[in-house]
Length: 216
Image 1 (cartoon, helix red, strand yellow):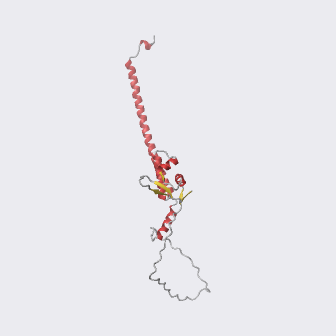
Image 2 (cartoon, rainbow, N blue to C red):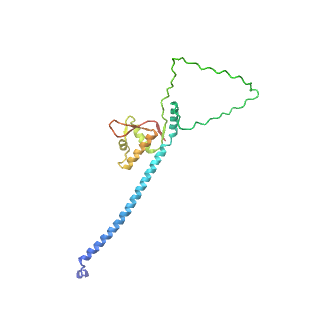
Image 3 (cartoon, rainbow, N blue to C red):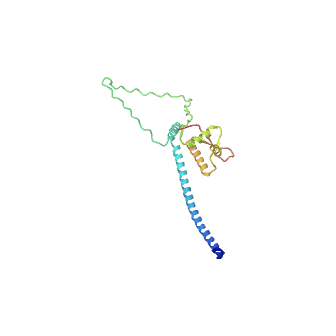
């Protein structure tokens, strides 16, 4: 006969030992949950920071090539008598060589000013028609913006919605991925590469390419 058979432990002792193990496990699980919560919070913060930096990068890329469009806008504004908010261009000085002694002639009397012709009373003043505005070519350097424009330019006759583009580009349903796609469309709209299209009775926004861009 063994010792355990001769002197069996009372049932209450096993229950106390099992309850002690359960309590220790609960403590360890609680500590793990706290560490996991802290790690998830740190991951969420870093992900938001990364998305903000990516949005800033896209904004900076869209500003590379704004100068040619600004020049075109200023030229168009001058045709309509609109003065852009900038200083006048600097005056260019031209150096004229001094004439030699043999080339110097006595000054001549100035010619009398000619009288401008008087138009007939029934003639109307000529009105200059400004040339149609030609948008400057937009430089697209962002790979993501190039992918979006490539899809839209494949069918320039159709207005493209966000959901249509997401299906073609394989953009997941994740809110952050869809937000990134909407930010990309917004930047292309602001730089003039896309135009917004509205449909009657449809609250969604659609886009169409202006075909005034090129990739680098």
